[in-house]
Length: 83
Image (cartoon, rainbow, N blue to C red):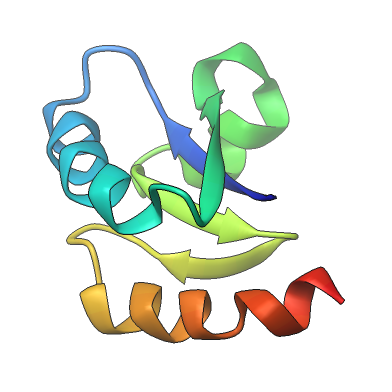
């Protein structure tokens, strides 16, 4: 299964809202690696006010609010990505 990176920070209510929307869309198709931006200076510098952000292999998939169309397009490519 592929793994998407979910950049977040503790106490971020927008991050929690987006995660609730995202989980059902990814269930059984992709796993989520939660990346707390405050745990690494380079992530904090890059994403400070942009969280939540979803990336796959360094490519932005969606920011907030969750772009359902972008998620659907990404998931449609999953079979290609696995090959």
